[in-house]
Image (cartoon, rainbow, N blue to C red; front, side, top):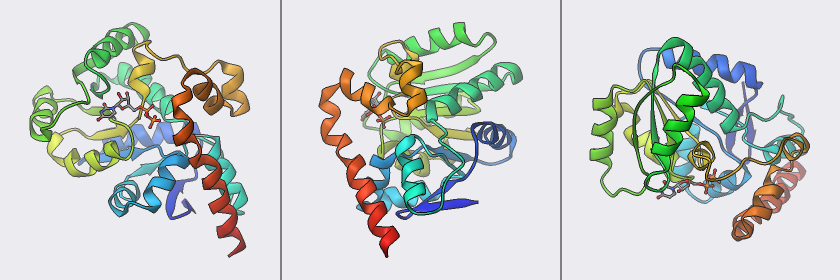
Length: 238
Ligand code: UDP
């Protein structure tokens, strides 16, 4: 069941349910993709029909972040909780390491995906990395063909939003993979370049504050969060 927040439908599921669904999609025939929108992406979608279509067309729409959970509450249709994209990715890698499925890492600055691959192989013994590619390319076709020839089952697409959502919608089928997941800045974290917020921040739902503190240039983007809450409150009044 999806809960609609300002035009974007979110799957009302727990982290465990999301993991089970991700594994099911990985094994199912055909191609599937997962998106992990935060309030900023919802705001972007409101002004970008192509982004809205790409997000709405996903097989799984996960509530990435506390802002979405607040938005749902304001609208009177609460979600079970948040499912951070990074946690979903970690759960999937645990399962892939067991099943032998292969993973392609796409995105971030040159060298980052390779470093992430090395670290992840250490963290998830048995995890098979089919290939990597940076996220600063002009030609989709060459990247699609690299993924296809790697034979990857799963692709983590980390190009930032809404680029990654549009990319998955456009190229998912041709990539030959079964499951693509849009994960924003996750490769920067997996490579060790960027630290995830300490557990206390995560628990309190203040991960955004930590990210802002360590990277103040995000302030412009982050102002979309209060805007999102204002829009949600406006929608409720309607
Ligand atoms: N990125 C990319 N290609 C681009 C633009 C961005 O690969 O054309 C990468 C960027 O290097 C970073 C990620 O996409 O690793 C976006 O990170 P950000 O923290 O902005 O994403 P969020 O999780 O907030 O959506």
